[in-house]
Image (cartoon, rainbow, N blue to C red; front, side, top):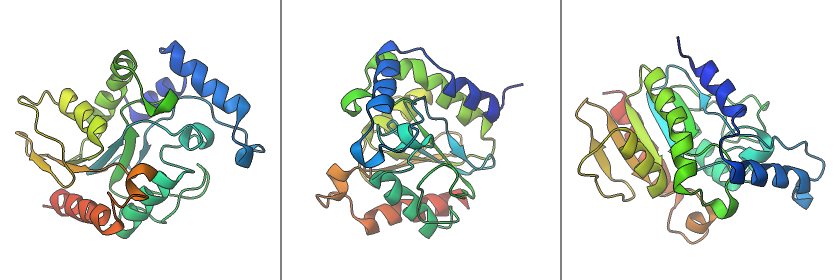
Length: 221
């Protein structure tokens, strides 16, 4: 039988995409000066969270000096500070920050994953790389038996979810957009909490918090 633990082991031992393997390992060798004393993870980053989650949060990919450094998705970078802060305020996480994978962070009713599991150059995976990774997300979705709400962080994650769920016609992405699925589940969309969006004010904390408040509301209906 499949399990989330089995998916995790397959993810962290994946070498399907030569370009991504080369990049993640190069970043782990060369490091950023601020993290020169870190032993970088330098491998694909698995999903993380509550196996009984009703809310699944999906992002684009690990950050080169975030998840690729720490070994946990959305951990050790500003996007992660935004995400786990919002999850904490929504009652889905026990603490508002995620510094490393041994920092005691626990998710309650939520699971966090990415469409692509390796940090891609320039944050831009190619179509073949996404195709190689999506079966992992498909298996996680199947294994999260209590899942009721998908939160898509950015258009790329939304497209990945919509493709896996075979949505036709594909709804348009927009911050705060909701899609009611035929099986009674929902997709809720948000701009990605990247610095490009948060520093410019395209995404504000109240906007982000509203997405997770709505996700919790739908998950508890």
